[in-house]
Image (tube, helix red, strand yellow):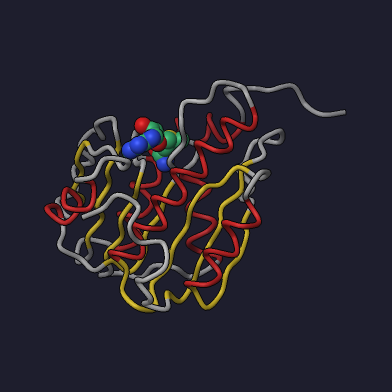
Length: 210
Ligand SMILES: C[S@@+](CC[C@H](N)C(=O)[O-])C[C@H]1O[C@@H](n2cnc3c(N)ncnc32)[C@H](O)[C@@H]1O
């Protein structure tokens, strides 16, 4: 029988005990390790970073010689690590790219997005809003990644998910779909992982950036 929803499940309690700001930290940790997406000294951009669980893991992965940039509609409390830079940015706004470049002119080795819209409980609407954020994350990745770089974004399965996966596949050498262990049992979210950015900036551009 399926377990009832428990907001304070094993990963929630583990995150609290280990000083991590979200249980999602375990998801990006698993994905980054499994797909070998980051090394010390590299640059990473995290979209939809608040409260900062992903960013804690990513900052440790690049270390003090690297750079970790996190942006969100909400503020990210200071992580106390000088190589981490954060700002309040609406990633759907026309100035999003220039706001990111003001933090780090780039390019980045990895772009991650855990962005999620405020859900309203209507599946098609929630999926469409989630996909809009995924496409914007992909457009920003195309504008900021090094050739050969990596991309990770949360996507809700359903709707145009197969189409989005194909869009990522046109831009990266390899595409994987990951469902990390820390994903809640009933969730229909997965992470699309692109490895080996082709450096072709022509595809999903023109999504509102200047
Ligand atoms: C699930 S939370 C991210 C959790 C984060 N990865 C962590 O580990 O702490 C989703 C985030 O997406 C952000 N978000 C949603 N729409 C956004 C937008 N248009 N621009 C920037 N951030 C957005 C929300 O503010 C929220 O903080």
